Every structure is written in structure tokens, then in C-alpha cells.
Image (cartoon, rainbow, N blue to C red):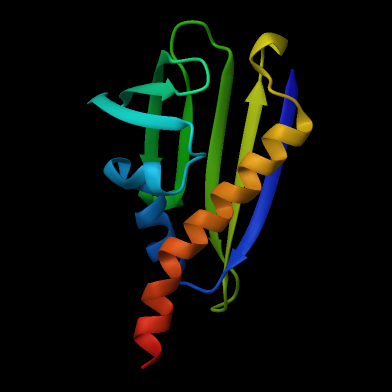
Amino acid sequence: MTEYERSRTMPALPEHVFDQAAAVDQMDEWLPGELHVHVDQLPAVTVHEDRSDQDTSALLRAQKDQMRLEWGTREEGSYAGWLQVSGLDGGPTEVTVHLSFFNEEHDPGEKAVNEALDRSLERLEELVRPRVDGAAG
């Protein structure tokens, strides 16, 4: 098993960050560009990967009271992950994303995964930033 984890501090309320991250119909706006989530009947979703042009059955659970998203493949159990939103003493919000690959064949490698996680966190921050910038004026 291989695991990866990245974190980013965002200047937004934890609730706003979590709501944006958990909005299934808007996940394409912050997930890696080659991944697309299609809702079947929650928690069941299908993830389409452009690179391989494959659809994978997965599960996605949002736990708003814990500000946590969890996901993973349904049938083959090749990967799982979570996103945790945490408030920092009334200041900025920390978002951590963790991925676990249980099958080496599905692991794209450290460089590719870390770049994808960093870019996803950047994109999520871009989505929540207007709420902060707009509230300031």
C-alpha cells in the first residue's frame, strides 16, 4: 500500500470550504482535470478518468458534522481517500487530502499524485476565495 497526503491553508471559513468541496455537482471544478464524478445514487458514484477513458464504481460519503469527505472504489478496492477540513482557532482553514493506493497498478507515482493533490487544493482555494474577497468589501 502507498499513501500520499497534502495540506493547504485557505483564507475562508471551514464551513464554506467543506460545502464547496462536498458539492458533488461542482467537484469537476477542483478535482484533477482528468477525473469526473457522476452521481448514481449517493453514496454510489462513478468516476470517469480521461487518461484511461475508464469508468470506475466508487463510493463517496460526506460527513458535514465532521467536515470530512471519504471515497474509495467499490468493487476492486484499489484506492481510497479522504478530505478533512479543519478550522484553525478562528483563523484560516486547513484542508488535508489523503490517498491510499492498495494496488500498485493503480498508483500513478509520487510525483504525479503530489502534483495532482497540490493543484486540486489550489483549485479548491480559488473557488472559496471569492467568498472571502467579496465579504471584505
